[in-house]
Image 1 (cartoon, rainbow over the protein chains, first blue to last red):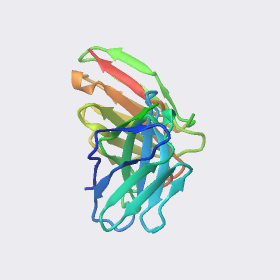
Image 2 (cartoon, rainbow over the protein chains, first blue to last red):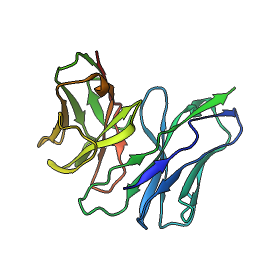
Image 3 (cartoon, each protein chain N blue to C red):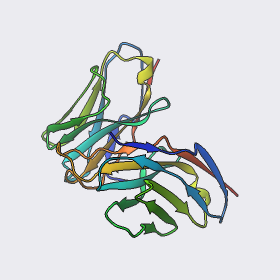
Image 4 (cartoon, chains in turn purple, red):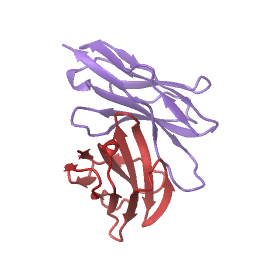
Length: 118
Length: 112
């Protein structure tokens, strides 16, 4: 079974600064997807960014980028120019690329609570 | 707004009771996943339905069951409720089996 570990329960960043959230995972699969989800106080789960394991290029979405290190099984999220609206819980998630059962459920880490200081 | 709707938003009930949570996927989405978010266990996968058929079960208790109807909406039934069942229950839908999942706003269940 796959596991996802987020070792930083809480982090804080000054507005306009850059912060990196860490995530490691364990899997025996060679192909898979990794995601970062944001959960603001409203509790809505919002997809921030995704990475396909077979792609060596790190994914970017505006101010959000990832550092994907497949050999190290590491998947960190970098938020540049942090804004007050970035304050939220951030969850790292794993999903298999192939499933014999035809089910592609997400396995989540415990989350990192990010505070943004004005 | 993801296009996935869940009702009710909040539910308060007593131990031993039974409740039904409802999820309407995005238009055209065939897959519905149910997840539970609790303080103890974090976000956990419960069960997956695709086009009316159960595809996979995760850490779902025997007291819990689900189904997906011909119009593709899904219901999660929780019975003999315990205090520990208090949690936020999400459903997520996707177009096909392997596409991106879009989450609903969740149902907050409080068992007193």
